[in-house]
Length: 141
Image 1 (tube, rainbow, N blue to C red):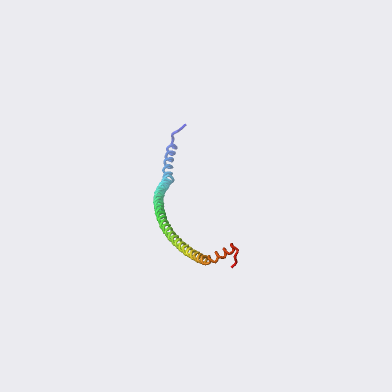
Image 2: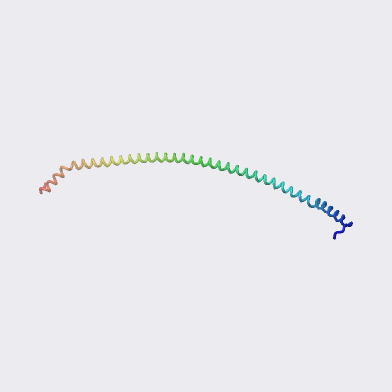
């Protein structure tokens, strides 16, 4: 059973004093530490958000510059390709022209040799005809 005597108020005072002392010694420092930690975490979260925004902006800028560089590279490639094709076409035309000129020169030489051979054979045709006729007829000259 509970008896109310002098020890009961002493225990209540002791408990209240213990609560006050515990509050001053333990709870307030722990609460302040938790509040500081909360502030630090909030600051770090803001920093993280800022860094993420900056990284996204830089990534977008990088992608934009990369796309511009690719476009410039393709344009430069097409320009160089066109110049090379034009130069190649010019060189091919020059080579064809040179080949045609050499062909015409060789054809002229062959025609000259053919004409010279024809004239030589035409001049000797009379003597060949006579010799053949003699052989066919069996005569000797």
